[in-house]
Image 1: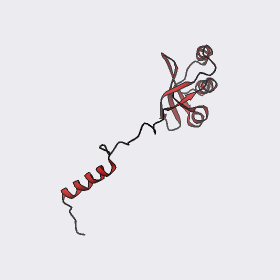
Image 2: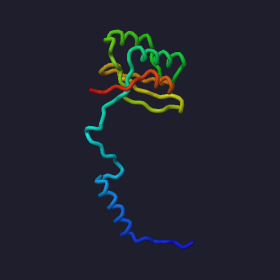
Image 3: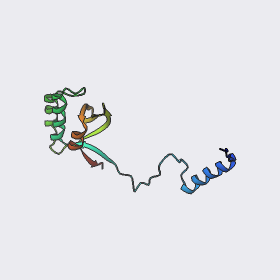
Image 4: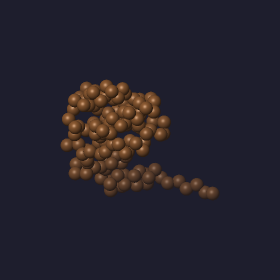
Length: 127
């Protein structure tokens, strides 16, 4: 089989042409306008947060909290309070490890099964 060589100048022109056609100076970064950006985050409500905490405690997950202490803390807050998930990652390929903001200076870590995570959390538009 015969090797075909292409001059480097032709390759450079093709790459430059593609960049200019897209009008994106950073081809690896996606261009978005402010109209298409949405500030949405996953949140827990009170009831589902307690379900997740009880589940983590009862199934001996690596990350769990004392549910009685959590219950005392969230009972002091209004009923419609939403608790944002500020960090999540897949852990052990069967669960999510999440960091949940409970108060201005308090956050907790929980391990939650994937199916329960999707069932107990909801997307919320951040205002």
